[in-house]
Every structure is written in structure tokens, then in C-alpha cells.
Image 1 (tube, rainbow, N blue to C red):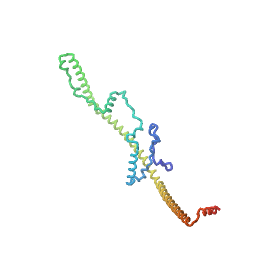
Image 2 (cartoon, rainbow, N blue to C red):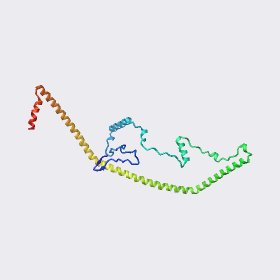
Image 3 (spheres, helix red, strand yellow):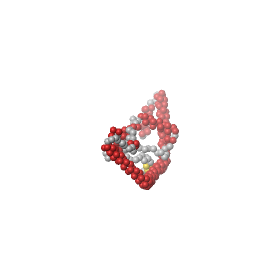
Image 4 (cartoon, rainbow, N blue to C red):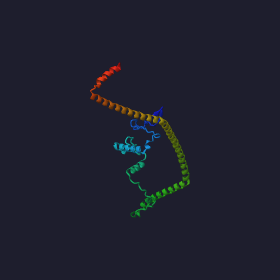
Length: 253
């Protein structure tokens, strides 16, 4: 995290205590300066960056299927209080089609089979069953009448509640967007303000690199000249080591 006089340039969220898998050791530090780094706009640099990213992905032992393995497991639902929902959940999980509702037999008048057409008990049993079905249809008709009378007002009230909820959510979203925009403006201001210092330091670093290369080049030239002088002295029979030993005490005096 880069700072300038205590000002934060890059934001890094600390891991929450409720998320132990997001420890500081596994956290990734965001070191980009998007408001002043324009190198990625260069096509040559972009192609090189993309090549390095692809190479890193090929070398990585972590596959896309492993990205979620560090997260805590999902809670298991037993549906103890709602067995019907549990049964439907297992059906969807198994990929089975939904059970088709048979409307034809539901509204069909049932009669005793042919072998019991003269059985009074069978006729009585099917009569009671059809009476119960008829009573059920009468109740459904009453519910439809009540829905036609009271349904529109209930729908209006429900729509009003949904509109109030939507307005509240939109207000919260606007407040969050304002906070995000505020953070982005602060980051942009700090990065652009510090870019002058970063550019000056970068220029100074380049100058020092050039100066170091010039010094290295001069040292190499001096070493070449010294080797040439030693070779010439050896050809003339001079012993430079004795001369240097005699010169050093004089310089010390």
C-alpha cells in the first residue's frame, strides 16, 4: 500500500473476522494506480502483459474448479418443518420433471363400475364422493367471487408496499453509489496529486541509472587502459608493483 504524507493511494480491505478463509496471508494487495498508469494503453505493452498473463495461467496449478474450494461449505437443508418443500427440492436436485396435475379427473363425475351398477352401497359411496367434490367446487366459486370483489384492492395495497420497498432500495443504492463515487474521486485526487512526485522520482531514477552506466563504462575504459599500461610495462621490463610500493609510502608521508 503506497502512502504519501499519510494519504492512502491504494485501498485494501482488511479481512473480516467472520471470513477466516480471507486471511491476510491469502489476501491480494492491489498495487495498481489506474488514474495515472496509462502504460496498458500502449498496444505493445498490452500484448506483452496479455502474454505474461496467459503464460502464468498455463503454469498455474490452480484450475477454475478450485477457486471456491477455500470457501466454507454451504449449509445443508433438512426441511424438517416442510417435508413437501423437501420432496420438491430433492426432485429438482435429481433433475426429474414436475408432477403433472390431472385436471380432467378432478372435475369429472365418477360412477360405479359396471359390475357394481346394481350395488346400492357402491352408489351411496360414489354419491357421497361426488357431493364432497361438488361442495369443493362451490367453495372454489365463493373464493373466486371474493377474489373478484376484494382482489383488486389487495393487489393495489400489495403494489403500494412494493413501490415503497423499491423506493427505499433505490435510495440506499443511490447512497452507496455516492459513497463509491466519493472514494473514487479521493483516489483519483490522491493519485493525480502524487503523480508529479512519482514522475520526478522516476526521472531521477532514470538519470541515476544512466549515470551508473556511464560510471561503469568509464571504469571499464580505465581497466582497459590499465591492462594496456601493464602490458606495455611488462614489454619494457618495468616492475610496476615495486614502483607502486615505493610510491605509496611517499603518499602516506
